[in-house]
Length: 120
Image (cartoon, rainbow, N blue to C red; front, side, top):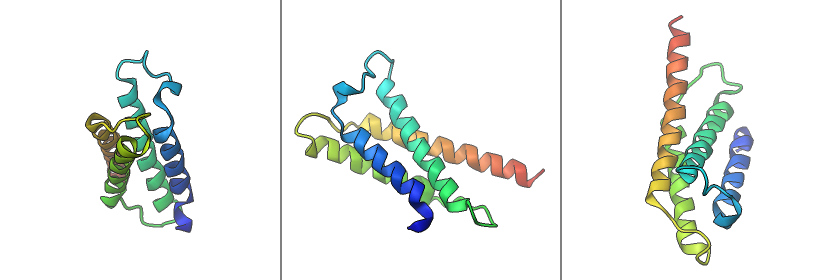
């Protein structure tokens, strides 16, 4: 756990943002603003987890759980929104898809960068 302090803090920030009443976030003027926010939050979580995992390791690695955890966490947040916010938030499958796409995108870009740097 001590190697994933930033990841843990990022999860707390995401939980607070996910469970905060939606009308306070003012994303309604941005086209698909909520979906972009989800992609950025969970892509950011993936990036932080990659950083935490590899910061002091001599062999950079990208196990698939670095994508699986943010996607699972996003699913849990959607369920909490749907069932534990007294109607202030609602769970949305499209939000989970945005979470997944953000996480996969960051993972894929990191994988490509690492691959290019290893072949240089």
